[in-house]
Length: 461
Image (cartoon, rainbow, N blue to C red; front, side, top):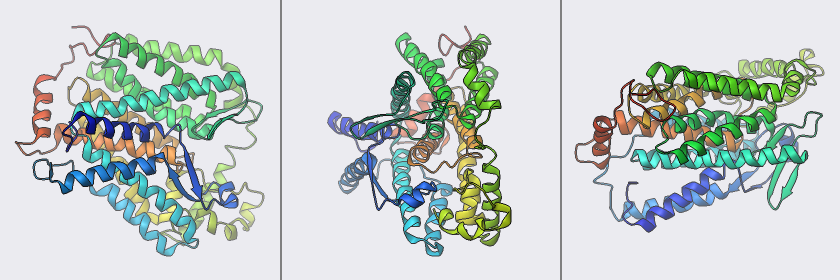
């Protein structure tokens, strides 16, 4: 039970608000105050973004505040510790505001980061049982299913569609890359690829046939939707994520050998159906899209070399790069914010920011693997799925921006769930807390061995 909840109505309201926040990731409804077309064209973050997430977070924190003031649970519950890496990264990013050339651009990113950090804190502190975590994951997978349907529909229509505030995006080149309502095709691929392994985790732990079928259909549709993005980075991320998940799960005895083979055969069928698009995207002329990223990486390194410790300020890459692109080495270069998340963090927040960001990611992976090494029927495969998705995303971040709200929010949400799972199952708890009792029950009554059957996809006992 979520801490502080005492009635079904309160629980329903909290879960409804949290579900809206999660579904707002692929189907974002927002406005941007102070939007700047010039810097937006360079792919910098522009404007103070107000979204459904913003208003739902306000409501969730007000409910939390009322509970705290009423002292319903503060003295009885020991909440999951936040950990210092995410907090330190936010502090470093906030400090960079003082050295930013363009304060407005820095404020835009910090405003977005603050909202996502508040969501991260809320999820970490309020996931008090495996049931809570499963609720969030299932909503994420439901959003993935709905977005996949939208993208499949757009592929049939063949052009962008606007319905009210929502835009279903189809890039107008000769291959018709699908972005759906998430954003660009690359952004859509990042959103999909990070969730595929979690979808597979739900498949192998499905408690009944209905959930098994639902998760399987979602995985199939999402894989096809990912293919339609024609994002090479997204494809590579999905391959790493699913490959790592299947290898680890097979080693742990959670997957029969036939399942990775079935996944491989399914992938080959998809490749055969879309072989022309694969060939053109992998070996054809991409208009220099891949080659143009390399000079931008050198540009980021030049900027970082001049500002090694604290960088040029959050979201200020676009504001400071003009003097550098006049160098002879960058003559005729496609001028844009660097398509490499790590180099972008290095240039904007310096080596200090990059170290804290990497620690944030690596600590989450370590904690996810700790839970995955347990034999807990649903929690261990789920932790593995979230961790595998994060590993694939880390590869994708080496060739793309990854600073849009959809991708950053999804990443921090997955990490929040990993931290909550780790604390629930491995954290030191007070013996009289509800969380301690829940963890004890999970450890002793839901432990499975390599010979147990997790689902129809697992090894048979």
